[in-house]
Amino acid sequence: MKFINVALALLVSLAIGLGVFEGGLRLLGLGPPVTLNAFDADLGWSKTPSTTLRRGNAEGFEVEFTFNAAGLRDDAGVTAGALPDAYRVIALGDSFTLGFSVKRDDLFVDLLEGWWNAEGRGVQIVNTGTEGYSTDQEVAWLETHGAAWDPDLVLLFTYENDLFWNGQSHYTDLPKPRYTAAGTREPGALQAPPARPWHQSTAIGNLLISGPDEGVELFQPGTVRLPKEMGALLTDRPDFMEEPIARTGGAMLALARQAQALDARVVVVPIPSHSAIDSGYHDKFQARMGLAAGTWDPDQPVDLMLDAARAAGLDVLDVRPALESAAAGGDDLYFQKDWHLNPLGNRALARALHEGLKDCPTLPAATTKAQLPETAPTGSGLPGWLPWYAGLWLALGTLFAHVYSKVEKPLAGFFKVGLMLAVVFGLVLGATKLVSILGPEVGRIVTLGAVVLILGFVGYKLGNRLGTIAELLKAFIGRGHWYLMPLVTVLLTVGSLLVVAASSPLVAPFIYTLF
Image (cartoon, rainbow, N blue to C red; front, side, top):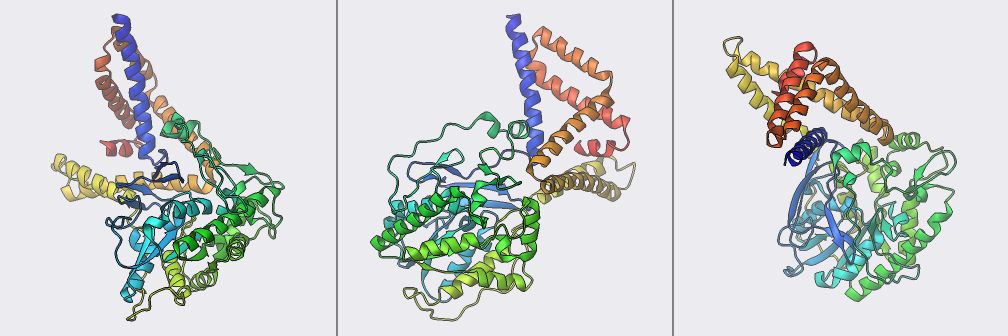
């Protein structure tokens, strides 16, 4: 019996230690990425219906995703079983169409729908955008679900990395459909992927085991290593891109055939990358990736996609001139770290679509004039850290002012806590930004080094007390008091932090802020 209790005490101690470490990493924003999707036997994956979640984007803004009963980021009543009497547009696309980094109020799909309806056109745009989709999956979506939605117009929004992934049977470890160059879907059922290894679903595993290139196929043109999905950018096109480009043409043929069966018009709209629109960013990207001038062209993937669509007899819309004009006017259309369109970019794209589709022969005529509001938002919401800062300041500041009201003025104490918190948040946010600038591989090493440095500093300040702590833990484990281990761990952790705080006036404010 004693052996069992000792074993339980050891397991509880280990679980608590790992849990605290995991929670600390997640609190610092180092947790595993949040996924929006689940396996889909027809499409590879699709969004989970009737769910709401929040995820932070690379610029520090929190974005809320709400998927309706049809698994769409659309209004609650938008389902195939309740179609209104309207001119229906299906928007096919990936994370750009989904609105990966913006609120729906700032998303070009919703902006265009609102603008058209303000003109009295009676239009419903169904947003099917799904994170990670390539052109073949978007075509497969139309083949699988298109008839139920009865579209009049299909807008296909593609992106440059589609050209590579259209040739692959898997996206990292996830199966996906693909088409032959002749336009037929490859036979065979998609098999659900195996459960992901533990290290991909935990912060500890992502920090210690998962590398930045895990699941990313690389190649080496010259002296630089690049993701294979960038192959379409190179002027000296690598051989492995020939088959994916041919399969992209096949996906366009399948799209044309399905649209004809649905009696729907199709317009293909390639979304250009940040580098194709902003010359300043073009140079930054070139330097960051180690590319030589003249060896790559960000317009090339757009041109390849336009050519594939035209070859299939589909209408196309090139939005580059409109976006370049908006960028030349001083608008920054893309996020800096995230490659997606920001709210201003979504607005510019909505204007480009409105102008480019005005002569679409099947689009209902406007009955009144309306304009997209000229005042554009400056962000996609409040920074995710701000509510945490405000809540901690209010709670800790009020508590401090009440407890120490006889020592100093309450208002002064309240603002002192706010200043301490500001320093702590500033250091954490600054370190996070530094890690993002350094790149994934260097950033991972720096993050791991910082964690080791902090733990080492705490150990150094505790000194001989570490032996005392070890003796206490050994005694409790040896006696088999596993049920007391959570309490003992909490008391020892708090006591250790207070000892470190008392030994260093520079560190004390940060630790006291925690309490």
